[in-house]
Amino acid sequence: MLPASNRLRRSDDFRRAVRTGRRAGRRAVVVHLLPGPGPTAEPARVGFVVNKAVGNAVLRNRVHRRLRAVMAAQLPGLPAGSLTVVRALPPSGSSSFEELVADVQAALSRVLR
Image (cartoon, rainbow, N blue to C red; front, side, top):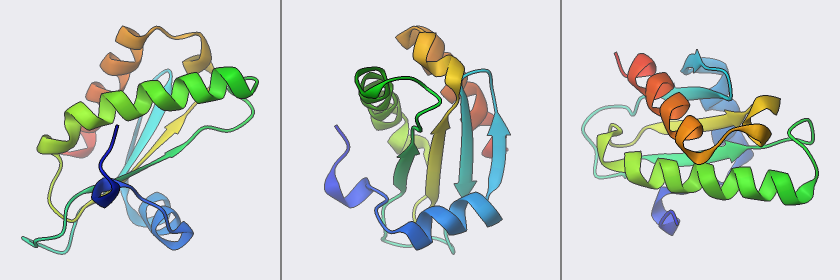
């Protein structure tokens, strides 16, 4: 579970991260990352987009839970003050947890270069 201070909630923040951040896609996910303004005391924040193309509500919730668990482990590696949006693609519904971990890690390493 992500701590409350690390959750992205405002639609303006989602929009800003998606439109102006760096993007890297893999088979099951697309990761958008907008680096913070510099060394700040603000924590990195993460948000998720899992739309109906992924599957029914049960499947979307499962994908959302898995992505939250993956990103909770990745939080220490994110720059302070950054905004990250993880968008699930339709293949994420049939992906295993290990495949989601690999896709998210590969996409994150690409946007953090």
